[in-house]
Length: 340
Image (cartoon, rainbow, N blue to C red; front, side, top):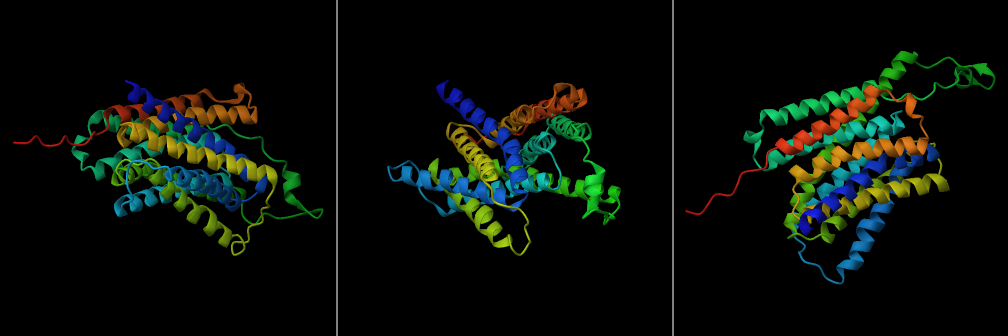
């Protein structure tokens, strides 16, 4: 019983951290006006929390062992996590808002998680009608969230259209620019959805490969984040002509987002250590995180509740119900054969 309660607490920790991740990261990106600089701060936070601290704790000893299989799978989990973080940052950069970007990501991720887990465990024959109905609910809720998302007040046209006192003609028609940005937002959301949906099954395989170690997979995740989220973006700042700026508020918000992500990764590992499986842990996390995300966004932005469409809230509820249905009726893998 205590082990089960511990697993629920670890799942709750992950859902809380990852639910707050998007809104906090959004503030960092807004302050630095850059998609790359917040990503660097996220990678630095991961390096400190997921590499330096676990490395010091590992000196005192821990069960498990370094294995090639475990290291490779754990590094791949880190790559998936970092690509997911990049997808979220790009979605926000192209004009997406945390209040609907994160529910869409968390709505699609459990579907990817379940399908990949079924593929890795060769359990597609266990995909039954209730599970497929859950997938349909997730998709329906995600579309509802996107259609009825809260809108920000439109910017003043005169201020945006003047340059040096003269009216500047737009480079492209407004409808075309809006369509391009929507495509970019949806592509970025898809990247985050697929990456984070793959995260749990891959991480579980890495931890199993290192004989149940908690710290070693976390270190590998931190190393992947450092390579992808720190070294690569720093090298691309000048070639891509990044026009953002480093400032204290943006750095602190982005470091906070990275810290939440790293602590959430630790919560996932602890849930697996306490007996959780990707089939159960990740859908519960992704089902609860959108609710936390929305509450955090509304609180940080002081959004009046009367401006939120009831259809938007209903869409979030449908996403959560769909994720729970996927959790309840997802394949569990084949039982081991009994000895003759």
